Length: 137
Image (cartoon, rainbow, N blue to C red):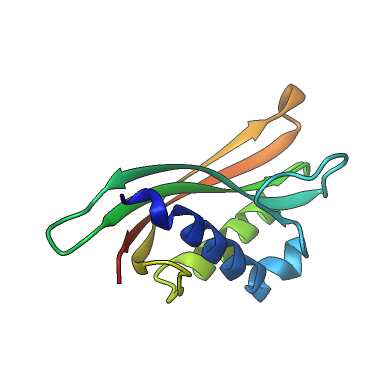
């Protein structure tokens, strides 16, 4: 079963982002796995949906994970959100991240989508899509 690495990867990505000073200097501790109840900060990072495909072979279990990390702000322009999105990419791309289960073979940026969101387009949202390969160690 190759989905067994999903929680370990998510935890490791979250830790990597919370330890990245280039991310936290702008968003502070506003890095979420799930949005908190009530008012959210003016700018934050949230881990998003994931799609996983089996990549097991004769040597053992493996998986390809495609997941989103989103930067959301209520600022008028995209400038600050793009700075945070760049910092997220620097923190994750080709990072040497240890997993609590399995091994991270690689983690790569795939694509980004910047758009207006929310009521009347008041929010700016950048969805960063990453691809990660995991396997048994």
